[in-house]
Length: 333
Figure 1 (cartoon, rainbow, N blue to C red):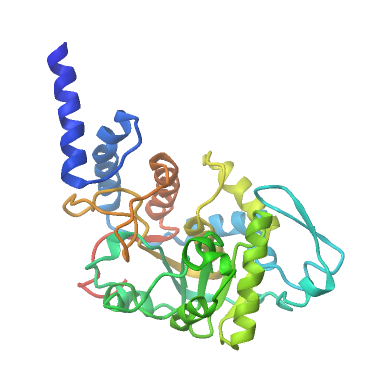
Figure 2: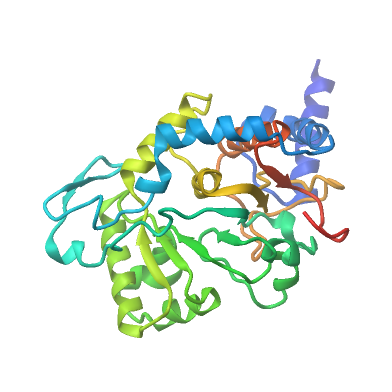
């Protein structure tokens, strides 16, 4: 019996040292990691073909339950002066004052708009050496997550085109000191995104709201061409219930799943890149860190991200959207 315990511990220590990845204390998670990956690869290896009936049915259900084309973004039309914004996480309320109302976009930017192809670009390190930049940029509409860097050699693998980029307010704290001091570094970081929409998740917590408003002020003062808009907590609540009814049990949705859901209402053909939550590359199982642009280990629970990925993989297999897990050297989508 003891020899099996020693072998068990040895395998765990070997994986930890070789890959330098911090796992949760649950050894079963560590040891089943590759099994889960192998299962994902097996599902992905099947030839992908869009299933129009499946896509239309899923899109119809998503639109009827979440109304992303009307509610995803706070506008002056759907959030008038005097109304209450209820946080999707803290459940606190904020009354819309004339001053706050004045910075809302007047009309929904996606109203009566539709695109044939959309690229949704996550920040997974699976993008390194993928040569997917050209394929990503070939889409009519490109969405990126959480202000990722696009220069310094990343262009070949992640592209440069951006029509919408998200900003989780935690970035304002971690990178820019909550914008309490110098704001120029933040404003300069936005140059990569041109006149794209900047989608800010500002109303999850009051401290995030304050930092987000400082970010909007910095953009306004600098006359940056980027166009900030606010993610609507009402939409996020509907989206949470939508995915919960389909088996997701996490307490909050990732940015990637939020924008992928929105894209499924906006676009006829949705392609996901950089969506890979695991610590090994699917091609040869070499170790990966969290993002393509740094070596920071993931702080997200393995089960949470893999649960979302499992839902996306199901949609891939049903021909609703397409996940890209390999390289793009062969060309095309």
